[in-house]
Length: 206
Ligand SMILES: N[C@@H](CCC(=O)N[C@@H](CS)C(=O)NCC(=O)O)C(=O)O
Image (tube, rainbow, N blue to C red):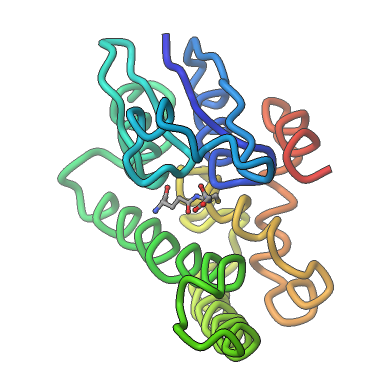
């Protein structure tokens, strides 16, 4: 049994969706970051960065970093075919784009969400947010060129990278996305419509 620590609308959405898609037995423990529930000593013992998601594996070990969880779940449930085989060049491309999203786009979203952490100037929040917004959008435009005819990043087969992109895309201004990145917009809509993901989408992003 997997135990996911997550918060509505947060980076735990992609891991919850991945757990559902692979057919894992899992539970979700809500650590509502909007209410500061991640700032307790009990939660620090689970994730020293006091962030969600955190994932307890069936053997009781705990991991952080959502993108690593996605890779782990793909490998732990190979029959779900949610990532190419480890060691293949297709897998190298899959991991490349998954990490591209995690270290650039998700990271940029954090600068938009927590600008005070990125400037010692109390007046600096708006500038941090504006440059982060441009940074995130530049990476969406790179991804947009990569998708091609789709419907997924790698053609007909959905992978963990698509689930991750659905989550990130749900954080974006939908009008901007539809106008500037129609391939990403379409991909996210296709992922959202998958039977196992519809209720998860509703619960996280309404
Ligand atoms: N690098 C981490 C980032 C996790 C993260 O920043 N989570 C946010 C929610 S989306 C969080 O817990 N925010 C609360 C905080 O940082 O105080 C990952 O990819 O999993």
